[in-house]
Image (cartoon, rainbow, N blue to C red; front, side, top):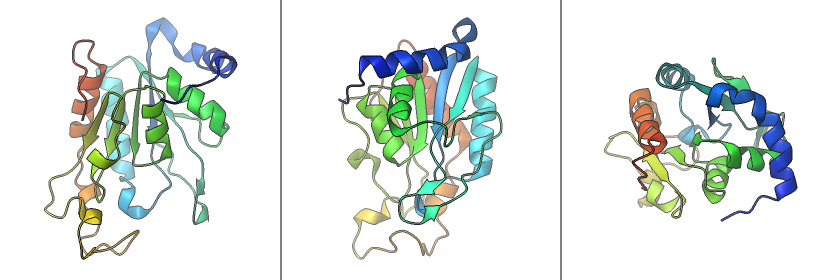
Length: 197
């Protein structure tokens, strides 16, 4: 578990308070930037956010930066229907914000892991990486994958590709459906069901 200092939580609670009009849920998303084999398409994210607004009285907040750890500056697609907090928070503020959210949805990235570490329920989107090796074991967490035969290829030898060059055009991520992501969100947001894995 990652402990967030109380003073930091208090400060971020004040920033988030206006978003909780009449008890609205606050859902965070992180779309990247990352390696192409870990990213989901903008159309999928857009449909997911539409569906979340249809299902819940919620605010969806897009988090992250326009900085790729290896490639430098990258423009992250902004998803319609979200509050754009990309580049607006420090790392510490981001972690505190994750702690205060009702749910986090993201690609396999640092923010997904930080969300689990602070105890926020997470829905992770996975393709070449086996989510059983990545999802936080002590948090409410679910993975969404497609059903392509090459799923989890980074754990096979010989490896088909690493960060790019997938011979199947990254079908594992492209074939994740927004409906499958919404189904996982519903399970984690249900007060009765608290699945893990």
